[in-house]
Length: 253
Image (tube, rainbow, N blue to C red; front, side):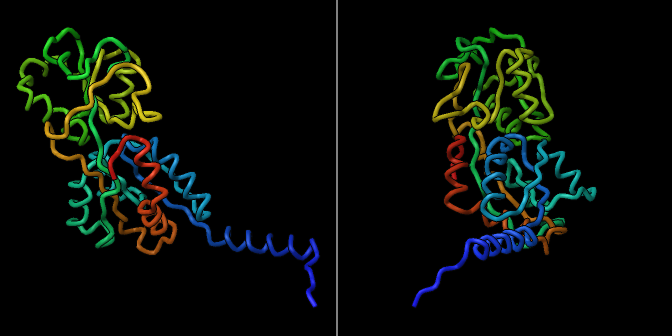
């Protein structure tokens, strides 16, 4: 003979489950390269819903994060804009060995808030009909280094270098362009991509052969060796659901 639980017992069971989940929920401090901050905000929300763990995000330039981590900054996971910086941290002994992996491959774009300025082949760079060209500082930001590689391979470095306006991160570089302080500049495609297209302004997606691949690596930092939330985030970034979100922002996975 079947018996049914009372609503009071069911409610008590659900409360016990939620308490158990929350009691095991943790927090992970994440250093996120500026180009990936938008996608990571979405992923952090999905991660918290799926696991109960909270990801606290800090955005900035990869080079600055490297210096901060070396100086003892309290980060658990580092999502860099390149693969070289996490590899350096590996060699420095600042990471959990074997944790590093490529979570995304970025794309560089020449973008202007002016919908008429940038043509589909980037020929605007040759005309020079602009006063300022924004890019992230190449020594701090991999997207800035990729921009300089692109300009150099186009044979335009000497012509364009006097017009450079450098941001310390790709986020600041985007701000220069979006506010009109620079007529155009190089940013990450993810910053201007929405719904499968450039969301505003005009742009040229830089061909991959004009710069080194922008492989973006994640790594678990040494202080988070026993942090369950940090390990869970690293695994979450490898899931099909996370990859779908990352692709939706214009990255390759």
